[in-house]
Length: 579
Image (tube, rainbow, N blue to C red; front, side, top):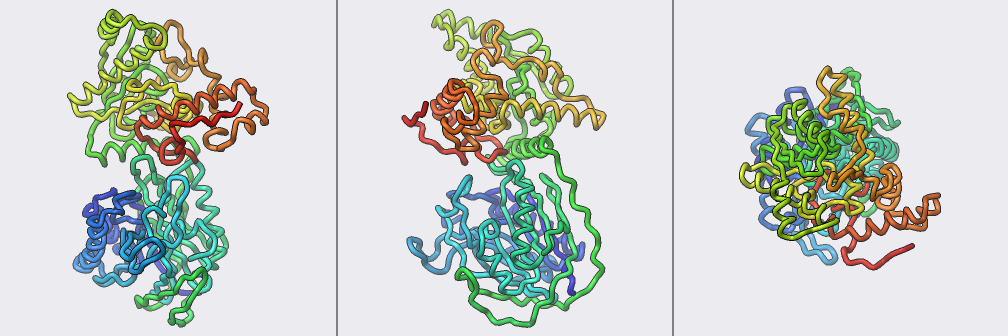
Protein backbone atom coordinates (compact mmCIF):
# COMPACT_ATOMS: atom_id res chain seq x y z
CA UNK A 1 0.00 0.00 0.00
CA UNK A 2 1.28 3.51 -0.74
CA UNK A 3 2.37 5.65 2.18
CA UNK A 4 1.52 9.31 2.66
CA UNK A 5 3.38 11.47 5.16
CA UNK A 6 0.75 13.94 6.38
CA UNK A 7 1.33 17.02 8.53
CA UNK A 8 -1.55 18.54 10.50
CA UNK A 9 -0.61 22.08 11.49
CA UNK A 10 -2.49 22.94 14.68
CA UNK A 11 -2.05 26.72 14.77
CA UNK A 12 -3.55 29.87 16.30
CA UNK A 13 -4.82 32.31 13.64
CA UNK A 14 -5.74 35.86 14.71
CA UNK A 15 -9.02 37.24 13.37
CA UNK A 16 -8.39 40.05 10.90
CA UNK A 17 -4.58 39.78 10.91
CA UNK A 18 -4.21 38.25 7.47
CA UNK A 19 -0.54 39.18 7.07
CA UNK A 20 0.42 37.53 10.37
CA UNK A 21 -1.62 34.46 9.59
CA UNK A 22 0.08 34.05 6.21
CA UNK A 23 3.47 34.37 7.89
CA UNK A 24 2.48 31.56 10.24
CA UNK A 25 1.37 29.35 7.35
CA UNK A 26 4.78 29.81 5.74
CA UNK A 27 6.59 29.10 9.01
CA UNK A 28 4.71 25.90 9.76
CA UNK A 29 4.86 24.76 6.12
CA UNK A 30 8.63 25.07 6.25
CA UNK A 31 8.71 22.93 9.40
CA UNK A 32 6.48 20.34 7.71
CA UNK A 33 8.68 20.30 4.60
CA UNK A 34 11.80 19.82 6.69
CA UNK A 35 10.11 16.84 8.33
CA UNK A 36 9.48 15.25 4.94
CA UNK A 37 5.72 15.86 4.77
CA UNK A 38 3.99 15.22 1.45
CA UNK A 39 0.83 17.15 2.34
CA UNK A 40 0.22 19.76 5.04
CA UNK A 41 -3.18 20.97 6.26
CA UNK A 42 -4.08 24.06 8.27
CA UNK A 43 -7.31 24.88 10.17
CA UNK A 44 -10.55 26.32 8.86
CA UNK A 45 -10.27 29.97 7.70
CA UNK A 46 -6.66 30.10 8.86
CA UNK A 47 -5.92 33.13 6.67
CA UNK A 48 -8.60 35.33 8.25
CA UNK A 49 -9.04 33.78 11.68
CA UNK A 50 -12.34 32.32 12.83
CA UNK A 51 -15.12 33.24 13.34
CA UNK A 52 -15.07 36.51 11.41
CA UNK A 53 -18.76 37.30 12.03
CA UNK A 54 -19.90 40.43 10.15
CA UNK A 55 -16.44 40.98 8.72
CA UNK A 56 -17.62 38.44 6.15
CA UNK A 57 -20.07 41.07 4.88
CA UNK A 58 -17.31 43.58 4.11
CA UNK A 59 -16.23 43.28 0.50
CA UNK A 60 -12.83 44.76 1.29
CA UNK A 61 -12.13 42.02 3.83
CA UNK A 62 -13.26 39.24 1.50
CA UNK A 63 -11.07 40.60 -1.29
CA UNK A 64 -8.10 40.92 1.06
CA UNK A 65 -8.50 37.24 1.93
CA UNK A 66 -8.75 36.18 -1.71
CA UNK A 67 -5.75 38.24 -2.73
CA UNK A 68 -3.72 36.95 0.20
CA UNK A 69 -4.44 33.38 -0.89
CA UNK A 70 -2.96 33.95 -4.35
CA UNK A 71 0.02 35.84 -2.93
CA UNK A 72 0.63 33.08 -0.38
CA UNK A 73 0.81 30.46 -3.13
CA UNK A 74 3.48 32.49 -4.91
CA UNK A 75 5.37 33.18 -1.71
CA UNK A 76 5.52 29.49 -0.78
CA UNK A 77 7.01 28.70 -4.17
CA UNK A 78 9.47 31.60 -3.97
CA UNK A 79 10.69 30.33 -0.60
CA UNK A 80 11.32 26.84 -1.93
CA UNK A 81 8.18 25.26 -0.52
CA UNK A 82 6.12 25.05 -3.69
CA UNK A 83 6.44 21.28 -4.14
CA UNK A 84 4.60 20.61 -0.88
CA UNK A 85 0.81 20.81 -1.33
CA UNK A 86 -0.73 23.06 1.33
CA UNK A 87 -4.40 23.01 2.34
CA UNK A 88 -5.59 26.28 3.91
CA UNK A 89 -8.93 27.75 4.91
CA UNK A 90 -9.86 31.26 3.78
CA UNK A 91 -12.81 33.61 3.19
CA UNK A 92 -13.96 33.48 -0.42
CA UNK A 93 -16.87 34.25 -2.72
CA UNK A 94 -19.43 32.14 -4.55
CA UNK A 95 -19.29 32.10 -8.33
CA UNK A 96 -23.00 31.53 -8.82
CA UNK A 97 -26.25 32.81 -7.43
CA UNK A 98 -28.40 30.69 -5.12
CA UNK A 99 -31.92 31.41 -3.83
CA UNK A 100 -31.94 34.75 -1.98
CA UNK A 101 -28.16 35.13 -2.38
CA UNK A 102 -26.48 36.76 -5.39
CA UNK A 103 -23.31 35.60 -7.06
CA UNK A 104 -20.29 36.89 -5.17
CA UNK A 105 -21.77 36.17 -1.72
CA UNK A 106 -19.24 35.16 0.98
CA UNK A 107 -18.22 31.56 1.43
CA UNK A 108 -16.26 29.64 4.04
CA UNK A 109 -13.65 28.18 1.71
CA UNK A 110 -10.53 26.08 1.53
CA UNK A 111 -7.87 25.87 -1.16
CA UNK A 112 -4.89 23.77 -2.13
CA UNK A 113 -1.69 25.65 -2.95
CA UNK A 114 0.95 23.90 -5.07
CA UNK A 115 3.86 25.06 -7.19
CA UNK A 116 2.93 28.71 -6.85
CA UNK A 117 -0.69 28.27 -7.87
CA UNK A 118 -4.11 27.88 -6.27
CA UNK A 119 -4.89 24.49 -7.81
CA UNK A 120 -8.18 23.75 -6.06
CA UNK A 121 -10.89 25.73 -4.26
CA UNK A 122 -14.05 24.54 -2.55
CA UNK A 123 -16.56 25.82 0.00
CA UNK A 124 -18.01 24.33 3.17
CA UNK A 125 -21.06 22.22 2.30
CA UNK A 126 -22.95 22.08 5.61
CA UNK A 127 -23.30 25.44 7.38
CA UNK A 128 -23.96 25.22 11.15
CA UNK A 129 -26.75 27.38 12.49
CA UNK A 130 -27.01 26.40 16.16
CA UNK A 131 -25.31 27.24 19.45
CA UNK A 132 -22.51 29.73 18.79
CA UNK A 133 -22.76 29.31 15.02
CA UNK A 134 -24.84 31.36 12.61
CA UNK A 135 -23.10 30.64 9.31
CA UNK A 136 -26.35 30.73 7.33
CA UNK A 137 -26.31 34.46 8.04
CA UNK A 138 -23.06 34.86 6.13
CA UNK A 139 -22.18 32.06 3.76
CA UNK A 140 -23.34 30.22 0.68
CA UNK A 141 -22.80 26.43 0.86
CA UNK A 142 -20.43 24.58 -1.45
CA UNK A 143 -21.54 21.90 -3.88
CA UNK A 144 -18.49 19.81 -4.71
CA UNK A 145 -16.29 17.11 -3.28
CA UNK A 146 -12.65 17.96 -3.91
CA UNK A 147 -10.30 14.98 -4.18
CA UNK A 148 -6.52 15.35 -4.43
CA UNK A 149 -4.56 12.61 -6.12
CA UNK A 150 -0.96 12.59 -4.94
CA UNK A 151 1.63 9.87 -4.51
CA UNK A 152 -0.87 7.29 -5.67
CA UNK A 153 -3.53 8.16 -3.08
CA UNK A 154 -6.89 9.94 -3.37
CA UNK A 155 -7.49 12.39 -0.51
CA UNK A 156 -11.06 13.72 -0.08
CA UNK A 157 -11.36 17.16 1.53
CA UNK A 158 -13.98 18.56 3.91
CA UNK A 159 -14.51 21.48 6.30
CA UNK A 160 -15.63 21.07 9.94
CA UNK A 161 -19.46 20.83 9.91
CA UNK A 162 -19.23 18.63 6.80
CA UNK A 163 -18.55 15.67 9.10
CA UNK A 164 -20.91 16.68 11.94
CA UNK A 165 -23.92 16.11 9.66
CA UNK A 166 -24.90 12.80 8.10
CA UNK A 167 -24.26 12.17 4.42
CA UNK A 168 -22.69 14.90 2.34
CA UNK A 169 -18.94 14.75 1.89
CA UNK A 170 -18.51 11.72 4.15
CA UNK A 171 -20.77 9.58 1.98
CA UNK A 172 -19.31 11.15 -1.15
CA UNK A 173 -15.79 10.24 -0.03
CA UNK A 174 -16.83 6.57 0.07
CA UNK A 175 -18.47 6.83 -3.35
CA UNK A 176 -15.29 8.38 -4.72
CA UNK A 177 -13.15 5.56 -3.30
CA UNK A 178 -10.97 7.97 -1.29
CA UNK A 179 -8.01 6.57 0.61
CA UNK A 180 -8.15 9.38 3.20
CA UNK A 181 -10.73 11.91 4.36
CA UNK A 182 -8.96 15.11 5.45
CA UNK A 183 -11.01 17.64 7.44
CA UNK A 184 -9.95 21.17 8.45
CA UNK A 185 -11.72 22.62 11.47
CA UNK A 186 -12.48 25.60 13.69
CA UNK A 187 -14.19 23.60 16.43
CA UNK A 188 -14.61 25.54 19.70
CA UNK A 189 -13.92 23.93 23.05
CA UNK A 190 -16.52 22.90 25.58
CA UNK A 191 -16.39 20.33 28.36
CA UNK A 192 -16.06 16.73 27.14
CA UNK A 193 -16.02 17.78 23.48
CA UNK A 194 -12.70 15.99 22.93
CA UNK A 195 -14.48 12.71 23.62
CA UNK A 196 -17.34 13.69 21.33
CA UNK A 197 -14.91 14.55 18.52
CA UNK A 198 -13.15 11.21 18.81
CA UNK A 199 -16.39 9.24 18.62
CA UNK A 200 -17.51 11.36 15.66
CA UNK A 201 -14.22 10.80 13.84
CA UNK A 202 -14.43 7.06 14.41
CA UNK A 203 -17.98 6.92 13.10
CA UNK A 204 -17.26 9.03 10.03
CA UNK A 205 -14.10 7.08 9.20
CA UNK A 206 -16.16 3.90 9.18
CA UNK A 207 -18.80 5.52 6.99
CA UNK A 208 -16.18 6.87 4.57
CA UNK A 209 -14.41 3.51 4.50
CA UNK A 210 -10.99 5.10 5.03
CA UNK A 211 -8.84 6.78 7.67
CA UNK A 212 -9.89 10.28 8.75
CA UNK A 213 -7.49 13.11 9.60
CA UNK A 214 -8.87 16.03 11.60
CA UNK A 215 -6.90 19.26 12.13
CA UNK A 216 -8.27 21.89 14.51
CA UNK A 217 -7.09 25.34 15.52
CA UNK A 218 -5.93 26.46 18.97
CA UNK A 219 -6.09 29.85 20.69
CA UNK A 220 -9.20 31.88 21.42
CA UNK A 221 -11.44 34.52 19.88
CA UNK A 222 -13.58 36.58 22.26
CA UNK A 223 -15.77 33.99 24.06
CA UNK A 224 -14.64 31.02 21.99
CA UNK A 225 -11.64 28.90 22.94
CA UNK A 226 -10.09 26.44 20.48
CA UNK A 227 -8.30 23.49 22.01
CA UNK A 228 -6.63 21.81 19.03
CA UNK A 229 -7.00 18.10 19.79
CA UNK A 230 -6.17 17.26 16.16
CA UNK A 231 -6.27 13.54 15.46
CA UNK A 232 -6.04 10.74 12.94
CA UNK A 233 -8.16 7.62 13.20
CA UNK A 234 -8.12 4.48 11.07
CA UNK A 235 -11.05 3.08 9.14
CA UNK A 236 -11.63 0.64 12.01
CA UNK A 237 -11.70 3.45 14.57
CA UNK A 238 -8.22 3.02 16.01
CA UNK A 239 -6.45 6.20 17.13
CA UNK A 240 -3.33 6.53 15.00
CA UNK A 241 -2.17 9.94 16.23
CA UNK A 242 -3.50 12.72 18.44
CA UNK A 243 -2.15 16.21 19.18
CA UNK A 244 -2.17 17.91 22.59
CA UNK A 245 -4.86 20.38 23.65
CA UNK A 246 -4.26 24.14 23.95
CA UNK A 247 -0.83 24.00 22.27
CA UNK A 248 0.34 24.87 18.79
CA UNK A 249 1.76 21.70 17.29
CA UNK A 250 2.69 19.94 14.06
CA UNK A 251 1.20 16.45 14.08
CA UNK A 252 3.22 14.39 11.61
CA UNK A 253 2.05 10.91 10.68
CA UNK A 254 2.86 8.28 8.05
CA UNK A 255 -0.30 6.61 6.76
CA UNK A 256 -0.57 3.42 4.76
CA UNK A 257 -3.52 4.11 2.49
CA UNK A 258 -5.46 2.39 -0.24
CA UNK A 259 -4.11 3.09 -3.70
CA UNK A 260 -6.11 5.21 -6.13
CA UNK A 261 -7.88 3.05 -8.73
CA UNK A 262 -6.84 5.05 -11.79
CA UNK A 263 -10.33 6.46 -12.47
CA UNK A 264 -10.05 10.22 -12.98
CA UNK A 265 -13.29 11.38 -14.58
CA UNK A 266 -15.62 13.67 -12.62
CA UNK A 267 -18.83 12.01 -11.49
CA UNK A 268 -22.05 13.22 -9.84
CA UNK A 269 -22.17 12.00 -6.25
CA UNK A 270 -24.53 12.01 -3.27
CA UNK A 271 -26.39 15.08 -1.95
CA UNK A 272 -25.87 16.94 -5.23
CA UNK A 273 -22.11 17.15 -4.73
CA UNK A 274 -19.96 17.16 -7.85
CA UNK A 275 -16.69 15.24 -7.71
CA UNK A 276 -13.70 17.37 -8.73
CA UNK A 277 -10.32 15.62 -8.83
CA UNK A 278 -7.02 17.48 -8.81
CA UNK A 279 -3.95 15.59 -9.94
CA UNK A 280 -0.83 16.67 -8.07
CA UNK A 281 1.51 13.91 -9.19
CA UNK A 282 4.14 12.09 -7.21
CA UNK A 283 4.96 8.41 -7.30
CA UNK A 284 3.50 6.02 -4.72
CA UNK A 285 5.96 5.47 -1.88
CA UNK A 286 6.35 2.76 0.69
CA UNK A 287 8.05 3.23 4.02
CA UNK A 288 7.80 1.58 7.38
CA UNK A 289 4.97 3.11 9.30
CA UNK A 290 6.23 4.44 12.65
CA UNK A 291 4.33 3.94 15.89
CA UNK A 292 2.79 7.12 17.27
CA UNK A 293 1.93 7.77 20.88
CA UNK A 294 -1.20 9.94 21.09
CA UNK A 295 -0.79 12.97 23.34
CA UNK A 296 -1.96 12.22 26.90
CA UNK A 297 -5.49 13.30 27.74
CA UNK A 298 -6.11 15.99 30.33
CA UNK A 299 -8.25 15.58 33.43
CA UNK A 300 -11.57 17.45 33.51
CA UNK A 301 -10.14 20.15 35.78
CA UNK A 302 -6.91 20.47 33.78
CA UNK A 303 -8.85 20.81 30.53
CA UNK A 304 -11.22 23.47 31.88
CA UNK A 305 -8.43 25.41 33.55
CA UNK A 306 -6.39 25.27 30.35
CA UNK A 307 -9.34 26.72 28.43
CA UNK A 308 -9.72 29.59 30.91
CA UNK A 309 -6.01 30.39 30.72
CA UNK A 310 -6.00 30.22 26.91
CA UNK A 311 -9.07 32.43 26.62
CA UNK A 312 -7.65 35.05 28.98
CA UNK A 313 -4.22 35.07 27.36
CA UNK A 314 -5.66 35.44 23.86
CA UNK A 315 -8.04 38.22 24.80
CA UNK A 316 -5.31 40.26 26.47
CA UNK A 317 -2.65 39.77 23.82
CA UNK A 318 -4.81 39.91 20.71
CA UNK A 319 -6.36 43.18 21.87
CA UNK A 320 -2.96 44.77 22.31
CA UNK A 321 -2.73 44.81 26.10
CA UNK A 322 0.20 43.67 28.22
CA UNK A 323 -1.17 43.73 31.76
CA UNK A 324 -4.35 43.11 33.72
CA UNK A 325 -5.92 44.61 36.84
CA UNK A 326 -7.98 42.64 39.36
CA UNK A 327 -9.80 43.61 42.51
CA UNK A 328 -8.42 41.04 44.94
CA UNK A 329 -10.83 40.57 47.84
CA UNK A 330 -9.43 37.46 49.49
CA UNK A 331 -12.41 35.46 48.25
CA UNK A 332 -12.32 32.38 46.05
CA UNK A 333 -13.49 34.02 42.81
CA UNK A 334 -10.91 36.81 42.58
CA UNK A 335 -8.25 34.38 43.83
CA UNK A 336 -8.91 31.96 40.97
CA UNK A 337 -9.03 34.81 38.44
CA UNK A 338 -5.66 36.03 39.72
CA UNK A 339 -4.16 32.54 39.42
CA UNK A 340 -5.50 32.21 35.86
CA UNK A 341 -4.07 35.60 34.94
CA UNK A 342 -0.66 34.75 36.36
CA UNK A 343 -0.58 31.52 34.36
CA UNK A 344 -1.80 33.30 31.24
CA UNK A 345 0.51 36.33 31.05
CA UNK A 346 2.98 36.07 33.95
CA UNK A 347 2.92 37.47 37.47
CA UNK A 348 4.87 40.58 36.47
CA UNK A 349 1.95 41.63 34.26
CA UNK A 350 -0.79 41.06 36.84
CA UNK A 351 -1.76 43.99 39.09
CA UNK A 352 -4.13 43.47 42.01
CA UNK A 353 -5.79 45.91 44.37
CA UNK A 354 -7.27 45.15 47.76
CA UNK A 355 -10.10 47.61 48.45
CA UNK A 356 -11.30 46.91 51.99
CA UNK A 357 -14.36 48.52 53.53
CA UNK A 358 -15.51 48.57 57.16
CA UNK A 359 -17.06 45.13 56.59
CA UNK A 360 -13.97 43.46 55.13
CA UNK A 361 -12.68 40.80 57.49
CA UNK A 362 -9.04 40.72 58.49
CA UNK A 363 -8.68 37.16 57.24
CA UNK A 364 -9.83 38.22 53.76
CA UNK A 365 -7.33 41.07 53.72
CA UNK A 366 -4.63 38.65 54.85
CA UNK A 367 -5.65 36.06 52.24
CA UNK A 368 -5.38 38.61 49.45
CA UNK A 369 -1.92 39.67 50.59
CA UNK A 370 -0.83 36.05 50.97
CA UNK A 371 -1.93 35.18 47.43
CA UNK A 372 0.11 38.10 46.12
CA UNK A 373 3.15 36.87 48.05
CA UNK A 374 2.69 33.28 46.85
CA UNK A 375 2.41 34.23 43.17
CA UNK A 376 4.65 37.29 42.99
CA UNK A 377 2.04 39.50 41.35
CA UNK A 378 1.89 43.27 41.90
CA UNK A 379 -0.24 44.19 44.90
CA UNK A 380 -1.47 47.31 46.65
CA UNK A 381 -4.18 48.26 49.13
CA UNK A 382 -6.54 51.21 48.63
CA UNK A 383 -9.25 51.40 51.34
CA UNK A 384 -12.65 52.60 50.13
CA UNK A 385 -13.85 53.67 53.61
CA UNK A 386 -13.26 57.43 53.07
CA UNK A 387 -15.14 57.38 49.76
CA UNK A 388 -17.90 55.26 51.23
CA UNK A 389 -18.34 57.56 54.21
CA UNK A 390 -18.60 60.59 51.94
CA UNK A 391 -21.37 58.99 49.88
CA UNK A 392 -23.22 57.80 52.97
CA UNK A 393 -23.09 61.27 54.51
CA UNK A 394 -24.48 62.79 51.34
CA UNK A 395 -27.13 60.14 50.56
CA UNK A 396 -27.90 58.24 53.76
CA UNK A 397 -28.23 54.90 51.94
CA UNK A 398 -29.40 51.74 53.71
CA UNK A 399 -29.86 48.04 52.97
CA UNK A 400 -29.08 46.81 49.47
CA UNK A 401 -28.26 50.32 48.23
CA UNK A 402 -25.58 50.59 50.92
CA UNK A 403 -24.16 47.17 50.00
CA UNK A 404 -24.07 47.91 46.28
CA UNK A 405 -22.43 51.27 46.83
CA UNK A 406 -19.32 49.49 48.11
CA UNK A 407 -19.12 47.36 44.98
CA UNK A 408 -19.63 50.37 42.71
CA UNK A 409 -16.92 52.36 44.48
CA UNK A 410 -14.55 49.46 43.87
CA UNK A 411 -15.54 49.34 40.22
CA UNK A 412 -14.93 53.07 39.82
CA UNK A 413 -11.56 52.76 41.53
CA UNK A 414 -10.49 49.90 39.27
CA UNK A 415 -11.48 51.79 36.13
CA UNK A 416 -9.62 54.88 37.31
CA UNK A 417 -6.43 52.86 37.82
CA UNK A 418 -7.00 51.14 34.48
CA UNK A 419 -7.28 54.49 32.69
CA UNK A 420 -4.25 55.88 34.48
CA UNK A 421 -1.91 52.90 34.12
CA UNK A 422 -3.19 51.11 31.02
CA UNK A 423 -4.16 47.74 32.49
CA UNK A 424 -7.19 45.81 31.28
CA UNK A 425 -9.64 45.03 34.11
CA UNK A 426 -10.72 41.42 34.65
CA UNK A 427 -14.17 40.87 36.18
CA UNK A 428 -14.39 38.09 38.80
CA UNK A 429 -18.06 37.08 38.47
CA UNK A 430 -18.90 33.37 38.17
CA UNK A 431 -21.78 31.70 36.34
CA UNK A 432 -23.81 30.97 39.48
CA UNK A 433 -23.84 34.64 40.46
CA UNK A 434 -24.53 35.85 36.93
CA UNK A 435 -27.36 33.36 36.56
CA UNK A 436 -29.27 34.61 39.61
CA UNK A 437 -28.32 38.28 39.29
CA UNK A 438 -25.91 38.44 42.23
CA UNK A 439 -23.62 40.78 40.37
CA UNK A 440 -23.68 44.53 40.91
CA UNK A 441 -23.97 46.56 37.73
CA UNK A 442 -21.08 49.05 37.47
CA UNK A 443 -19.50 47.32 40.47
CA UNK A 444 -18.13 43.78 40.42
CA UNK A 445 -19.35 43.53 36.82
CA UNK A 446 -16.80 46.16 35.79
CA UNK A 447 -14.18 44.83 33.41
CA UNK A 448 -13.25 44.06 29.84
CA UNK A 449 -13.15 40.29 30.25
CA UNK A 450 -14.58 37.75 32.70
CA UNK A 451 -12.31 34.68 32.93
CA UNK A 452 -14.73 32.62 35.07
CA UNK A 453 -17.98 33.92 33.59
CA UNK A 454 -18.99 30.41 32.43
CA UNK A 455 -17.86 28.54 35.57
CA UNK A 456 -20.32 27.57 38.28
CA UNK A 457 -19.34 28.32 41.87
CA UNK A 458 -19.06 24.66 42.89
CA UNK A 459 -16.61 24.14 40.03
CA UNK A 460 -14.63 27.23 41.13
CA UNK A 461 -13.68 25.39 44.32
CA UNK A 462 -12.67 22.26 42.39
CA UNK A 463 -10.47 24.26 40.03
CA UNK A 464 -8.79 26.14 42.88
CA UNK A 465 -8.06 22.87 44.69
CA UNK A 466 -6.76 21.28 41.49
CA UNK A 467 -4.47 24.23 40.74
CA UNK A 468 -2.94 24.02 44.22
CA UNK A 469 -2.46 20.26 43.88
CA UNK A 470 -0.75 20.77 40.51
CA UNK A 471 1.66 23.23 42.12
CA UNK A 472 2.48 20.72 44.85
CA UNK A 473 3.13 18.00 42.25
CA UNK A 474 5.56 20.36 40.53
CA UNK A 475 7.28 21.27 43.78
CA UNK A 476 5.94 24.84 43.59
CA UNK A 477 4.12 27.02 46.09
CA UNK A 478 0.35 26.60 45.70
CA UNK A 479 -0.97 29.96 44.50
CA UNK A 480 -4.25 30.08 46.44
CA UNK A 481 -4.23 30.24 50.28
CA UNK A 482 -5.96 27.25 51.90
CA UNK A 483 -8.17 29.56 53.94
CA UNK A 484 -9.55 31.12 50.75
CA UNK A 485 -10.78 27.71 49.64
CA UNK A 486 -12.07 26.47 52.99
CA UNK A 487 -13.94 29.51 54.33
CA UNK A 488 -17.64 30.07 53.57
CA UNK A 489 -18.01 32.38 50.54
CA UNK A 490 -19.16 35.92 51.34
CA UNK A 491 -19.44 39.26 49.57
CA UNK A 492 -18.61 40.95 52.92
CA UNK A 493 -20.91 43.90 52.30
CA UNK A 494 -22.59 43.76 55.72
CA UNK A 495 -21.66 42.32 59.13
CA UNK A 496 -21.17 38.52 59.27
CA UNK A 497 -22.60 38.07 55.77
CA UNK A 498 -22.32 34.71 53.95
CA UNK A 499 -23.73 33.79 50.55
CA UNK A 500 -26.09 31.16 51.98
CA UNK A 501 -27.97 33.95 53.77
CA UNK A 502 -29.68 34.73 50.48
CA UNK A 503 -28.92 31.79 48.17
CA UNK A 504 -29.32 28.01 48.38
CA UNK A 505 -26.23 25.93 48.98
CA UNK A 506 -24.11 26.16 45.84
CA UNK A 507 -24.19 22.44 45.08
CA UNK A 508 -28.00 22.57 45.04
CA UNK A 509 -28.11 25.91 43.25
CA UNK A 510 -25.69 24.80 40.54
CA UNK A 511 -27.53 21.53 39.96
CA UNK A 512 -30.81 23.36 39.35
CA UNK A 513 -29.08 26.00 37.24
CA UNK A 514 -27.47 23.32 35.08
CA UNK A 515 -30.85 21.73 34.43
CA UNK A 516 -32.51 25.05 33.66
CA UNK A 517 -29.73 26.69 31.61
CA UNK A 518 -27.66 23.93 29.99
CA UNK A 519 -30.51 21.42 29.89
CA UNK A 520 -33.24 23.88 28.86
CA UNK A 521 -35.59 22.06 31.24
CA UNK A 522 -38.64 23.94 32.45
CA UNK A 523 -39.72 24.50 36.03
CA UNK A 524 -42.16 21.55 36.09
CA UNK A 525 -39.61 19.11 34.67
CA UNK A 526 -37.06 20.12 37.31
CA UNK A 527 -39.56 19.80 40.16
CA UNK A 528 -40.54 16.37 38.84
CA UNK A 529 -36.97 15.21 39.51
CA UNK A 530 -37.51 15.67 43.24
CA UNK A 531 -36.42 19.24 43.89
CA UNK A 532 -38.32 21.44 46.32
CA UNK A 533 -40.85 23.44 44.25
CA UNK A 534 -40.29 26.59 46.34
CA UNK A 535 -36.52 26.41 45.78
CA UNK A 536 -36.93 25.80 42.05
CA UNK A 537 -39.46 28.63 41.72
CA UNK A 538 -37.11 31.05 43.43
CA UNK A 539 -34.07 30.07 41.37
CA UNK A 540 -35.98 30.20 38.09
CA UNK A 541 -37.43 33.60 38.97
CA UNK A 542 -33.99 34.98 39.83
CA UNK A 543 -32.56 33.71 36.52
CA UNK A 544 -35.42 35.06 34.44
CA UNK A 545 -35.29 38.55 35.96
CA UNK A 546 -31.51 38.97 35.67
CA UNK A 547 -31.21 38.84 31.89
CA UNK A 548 -30.69 42.62 31.66
CA UNK A 549 -27.66 42.33 33.93
CA UNK A 550 -26.10 39.52 31.93
CA UNK A 551 -26.43 41.53 28.73
CA UNK A 552 -24.14 44.15 30.28
CA UNK A 553 -21.47 41.75 31.55
CA UNK A 554 -18.18 41.52 29.66
CA UNK A 555 -17.33 38.49 27.49
CA UNK A 556 -15.53 35.50 28.94
CA UNK A 557 -14.32 32.08 27.78
CA UNK A 558 -17.04 29.56 26.99
CA UNK A 559 -16.49 26.14 28.57
CA UNK A 560 -20.05 24.80 28.89
CA UNK A 561 -22.61 23.55 26.44
CA UNK A 562 -24.58 26.77 26.85
CA UNK A 563 -22.76 29.89 27.99
CA UNK A 564 -24.35 33.29 28.55
CA UNK A 565 -23.93 35.44 25.45
CA UNK A 566 -23.38 33.67 22.13
CA UNK A 567 -25.21 30.50 23.23
CA UNK A 568 -28.12 31.49 25.46
CA UNK A 569 -30.06 34.37 23.94
CA UNK A 570 -33.30 35.26 25.67
CA UNK A 571 -35.35 38.48 25.50
CA UNK A 572 -34.66 40.96 28.29
CA UNK A 573 -38.32 41.99 28.38
CA UNK A 574 -40.03 38.67 28.97
CA UNK A 575 -43.28 37.90 30.84
CA UNK A 576 -43.19 34.09 30.47
CA UNK A 577 -43.32 32.50 33.93
CA UNK A 578 -44.15 29.08 35.40
CA UNK A 579 -44.81 28.26 39.03
